[in-house]
Every structure is written in structure tokens, then in C-alpha cells.
Amino acid sequence: MLRGENGAGKSTLMRIIAGLSEPTHGSVQVFGRQSREALAQIGYMAHAPLVYDELSGIENLKFFAQLYGIVSEQPPQEALTRVGLDPKLTRRVGQYSQGMRQRLSLARAIFHSPPLLLLDEPFSNVDPQSAGHIAQLLAEMRSSGTTILLITHQLGLLSNIADEFLFLSAGQLVSRSPAPQVPA
Amino acid sequence: MSRSVLKLTAANVAKDLRLEWRSRDVFNSMLFFAVLVVVIFSFSFEPTSEESRRIAGGLFWVAFLFSAVVALNQSWARELRNGVLDAYRVSPSPAESLFLGKCLGNFIFVAALECLMVPLFVVFYNLTSAGPVWQLLIVFLLGTWALVVIGTFFAAMSIRTRNRELMLPLLLLPLSIPAVVNMVKATSNVLTADSSPVPQIKFLAVYCLVFTTVCFVLFETVLNAE
Figure 1 (cartoon, rainbow over the protein chains, first blue to last red):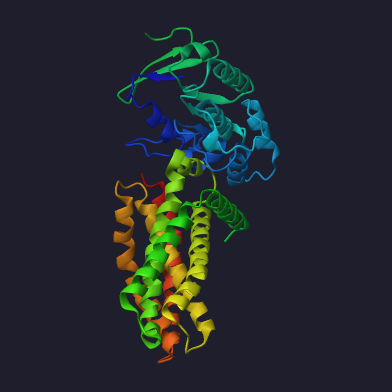
Figure 2: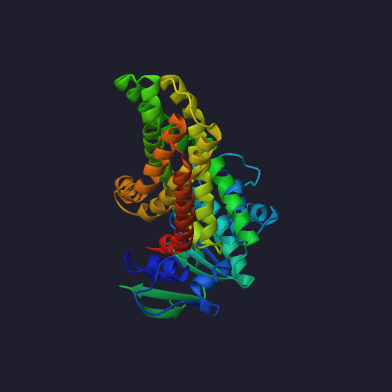
């Protein structure tokens, strides 16, 4: 779990790992390869939902699935079901509530079963019940071997399943501790 | 070009057509602008049939060029909403398929506009073609592709700038001048049958080939520039 004050560089670090931004110096390797060569193995959920408002949830996921070479409708449908959205919902995303958008955004990040999941504030704008549902889903994914790097200010939801806390300040890693020792 | 690029290009085109069908952002803006140009020029000049044949080439392409600018800005703006472009960039899909998909989508929009506008031009300017109409068709296909391919490229380049509506014409118009001059000349030559449009058609074919290749090669750099 990645922690730090506003402006500490948490989201920037995530964008660099996801291959969206270039580091000022140094390099990032994901599973032994440069980020941009390992994109199929990364799932990324940002502040913005990264989906089209004019399409329905399943239409969005089916389009993005094609970008990953997935032709079958099953992975997008399963991802929607796992985040608690109905795959048969024909309503356009523009008419979704904030919480539904957030869940769709998570579904978009996980439909291709990436071994590395980068989540930037997955619980923002989500009601407590849905947040609990998402936390449970992430716990299941962690148990099945997915590496999850997550930014959240709602520590209570995941502190019991997190392995490690990384604390950033002004772009520097200032502390790294096992989960129970939450830095003040 | 690999089969996967073509498949993804088709997926992008289908997605753009579906988005446009549901929002009609691009087409309505283009149509409104083009109709205004036709009507205003028609009432301002009241040209005779002979005069119309001489000026129609210029009118056509001015209307379509500026309408295309509107379309190109809109087509990329929808990729910025909700940060969707980032979803594309974090996927393993090749950038070329996005570029080709956008070019083909924009080509379809501008070509559809042209199909609607040509009858209006004929009515408002009492136009008849003295030369063979199939030559006009070639000029329109090549001219539209020329505008769309460099327009899509520069729209992608200017998408993250603060004044992108201003930036796109500033980048696009100077570079499109050689193509536009030849489109206008070729169109006028066909309409008046004064001289052959073949040299201009050849120029447009080369222009399309060169700029499609250059934009295709450079697009990934533009897409990933922050």
C-alpha cells in the first residue's frame, strides 16, 4: 500500500509504473521487463474512470478487451459480475452513479486478469457497502497471487490484508514497513 | 501490416461510429458549419452558372477544410473525457491501429458530410460539371484523405495543449496549403473542363502517400508524449 501526503508523488509513481509517464531518471522494470513491454500484465485504475460515457458497461469492456486481444465476451462479463455490476445493464455509463463508475473502472482494470494491479484511490466516491465489496474482491485477488499496489486514504478497509506500507514524501521513499506498523 | 493491427483498426472505427451515432457531436457541428458557408456565400455573391463553376472548387474545399477542423478536434476530445486515452496507452494495443481507426472514422464523417453537401452546392450555385464526374470523385477521395490524415495527426499533437481549438488550425492549415491548392485546381478543372486535372490528382496521390506514411510512423511518439 502506497501512502503519503498530497503531492508526494504517489499517482506519478503509479503512472510511471503503468508506462504512462517517463521517470526523470532511473527506470522501471515490471516482471523483468520495461513497463511498456509488459503492458498486458498490468491492470491500471486511475482517478478518472477511463471509460466512454456514451457506451454501456459491457460495451466499454468488450472494446477494451479487444485491445488486449480478447475476443470472448466471457472475461468482460465476469469482471463486471465480480465488481457487482450487471453485465446486462444497457444504461450508458454517462448515466451511472459515481460509485458505479468506480466499480466499472475497476472491472476495466481486472478483466484481463493481470498479475500486477495498480489502483489509485479505488474507494473514492464509493458507498461503504460497495467499498467493502471491492476490498473483499482485492483480498481474493491478492490470495490468488495478484500483486496489488494501491493508493488509498481509507486504510481501515485494507490494512488487514496489506503486506507492506510504503511511505512517499516529495517523490522519495522515506519508509517501508510491514502492514501492522502503520506509520503515523 | 499485421492482421491484429487491421482487426484493432476495425474495432476502433466501429467504436468511433457507435460513439458518434449516440452523441452526434462531430457530425452536427460539421454540418452546421458547412451549411452556413454554402448559404452565406450563395447570398453574398449570387453567382451565375459559369462563375459558379470557377469558384465552386474553392468554396467546396474551404467549407470541408474548416468543417474537418471542427470534426478532428471533437474526435480527439472524446478520447480525453474520463481519461480514456490513458486506457488505450496502458493497453498492449499498437498505436498505429488507433491512428488508422481515427483516420478512417474521420474520413467516413467528412465523406458523409460531402455526400450531403454536394447536392446543396448544386442547388444553391446552379452547378453542372463540364468534365467527367468520376474525376471529381477521385479528387474528393484523395482530397478528403489528405485533409483527414494530417488533421488527425496534428489534432492528436495539439490535444493536450491549452488552446487546442486554436492550435490545430495553426498547425494544419499551413501544411495543407499545397494539397488544398491542388484540390481546388483539380475540382475547378473538372467542373469547367478547361484543362486536365490529372497533374493535380497525381500530386494529391503522392501527398496522401507521403503524409500517411510519415504520420503513421510518428504517431506512437505523439501519443506517448506527455
